[in-house]
Image (cartoon, rainbow, N blue to C red; front, side):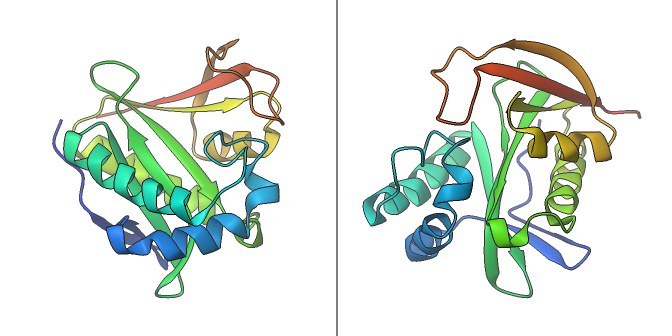
Length: 180
């Protein structure tokens, strides 16, 4: 697989590789979203500090450089960061997992679906033969994105990680395979 583009744009939204100077932005967006995100995301389930935000952007830079996770800020209206998403190399050769989160003020309008469509297209462009989305069974809103994009549910299995406060500990796995 090739490395993904650092900047993707379509349908009035942008996905851009996180920059190390964005710790303040990450802190602001995540802090304003804590109640919404904490039930589902382990990196915020115990709170989120300015130091956590700095570590977040540093980790995202390192993961990109190592080729393990390619993380993007989701932007609308020019420069407004409203969430994050990424391609994660942990499901075996030829596959990439997609992860995503949005500020609650930007859910329900199709933005997440558009972002993940763009990210999935990029995964196939760089050589993935399949893309997966994993979410906890209790996170019913997350299931809407793979359904709308034509992913197929392929498994339900125990999550090996301890569940966050909103989770039941069962991962739902969705898959979309490249068609050409």
